[in-house]
Length: 133
Image (cartoon, rainbow, N blue to C red; front, side, top):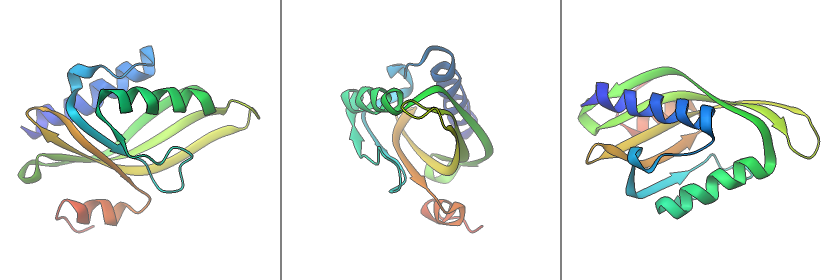
């Protein structure tokens, strides 16, 4: 299942970058999204309504938003994907360029993203799925 999970992560990110929307087809109805604690939008956000609130928050504070994925690790045993994520854009109110990175873990349930947790420490993200850096 992990190859399919990686494709879901990539496709959902590509669609967000293209259209600015999070398609519900990629997310389990019980989705929970938590950003890094330092984020202005730490969450957690729950359900489709929570995803929409997170998306609206992103566009309230940034413009020219683009997410980039790298360093993808399949974790088939845990039905999870670990990957580096970068947010590039501009702060809406100041115009300051934004380029921040972190590591996400996406857990899957019934073939859709069920839980997203962001980590500032890549090793901690790997440990969350039972891997060592």
